[in-house]
Amino acid sequence: MGTTGGLDFSFDRRVVSDYDSLRGHPPEVAREIGQAIAAQMPSSARVLELGVGTGRIAVPVAQAGCQVVGMDVSAEMLGELAARIRQHTLDDIELVQADITAPPFIDRGFDGAMAVHVLHLVSSWAEVLDQVRRMVRPGGVLVLGRDWVDPESFSGRIRTAFRKTVVEVGTEMLPPGASAAAAPSGGAAIVKTLVQQGAVPTGEGELVAAEWTTELSPRQVLDGIRSRDDAESWVLPDDVLTETMQRLDALAQQEWPDLDQPLPVLRRFMLGCFRYEV
Ligand SMILES: C[S@@+](CC[C@H](N)C(=O)[O-])C[C@H]1O[C@@H](n2cnc3c(N)ncnc32)[C@H](O)[C@@H]1O
Image 1 (cartoon, protein in one colour):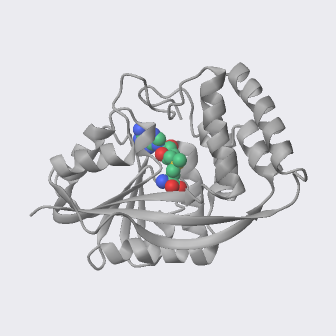
Image 2: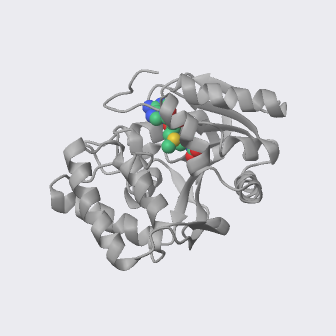
């Protein structure tokens, strides 16, 4: 694939081949996530996923009874998902290669939409949300999903230290699609924009769709950041990443002397759900 507006990285073959092993959910967790999202939608809903990727979310949502249209700009990510669709004979997922900033769909053609780890990649995310409002029928639902890692776990603490160290080393920590001039795409800004566009949160705050524990060693987390498998380190200049990792390695060695000792990490998958006013 090429790059998208303002992106200086791509979901290319390297990212694709590692994506599911790094970010995939255990089968039972994937099932729970699919069912929780489908439960927010009308029965047999036609649902658009923005940035469908390898179908980590779309596949279980389709298996839970929705008809999913997955849009993504990356031919490689879609290729991986197409292979999975063939392998599991999934009839209820349609794939469309397109940029979410220019979606090729008619007004009110969907009962719902979902977006997981994609809006922060696009500086014009507010316009993307306005397009979603156009494509989803009144009364339809938008689900925003995200993976959550316990900030108190060792992995959460390494990530917090990583972000702090990047800033100390001298770079502003911006997500890949953002620029200092663009509006921030944090949760509160997104909720405010959605409400201005006529979407109403369906509950108080986010829902926990699934909760589970994994085991990882500090070295695995450090190496994930170092090798740029971790999305937050994709966009760092080489010298900033090298200096950051030197400081982070020293800090981790002090805190967890056996870097290879697996430790538990509590994880959740969170859903923010919004309904477009009729
Ligand atoms: C971090 S992955 C998330 C994939 C999937 N939503 C998930 O949670 O597993 C982001 C996906 O968004 C896609 N993407 C990024 N910018 C995009 C754009 N402007 N238009 C369409 N897809 C985009 C990437 O190709 C990639 O597949």
